[in-house]
Image 1 (cartoon, helix red, strand yellow):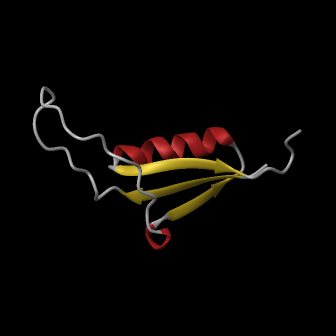
Image 2 (cartoon, one colour):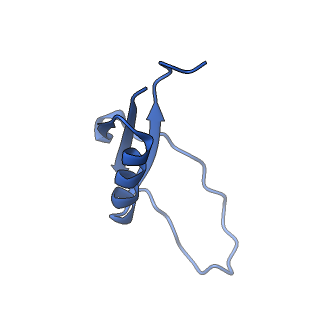
Length: 71
């Protein structure tokens, strides 16, 4: 089974106002495929550790896996 981490810079953050103010709910917008970087791993543990480091740098992260080996 293969794992990969997709990550990109989240430049669409709109965090206006204080926590006490109500604002419109944000909707998920899929990022442009051209800005997504990928890194491949053989274990989920390695992919998770890498994603923690990338997320601390302010990037959006998602971990994916292929379907080979699933029952």
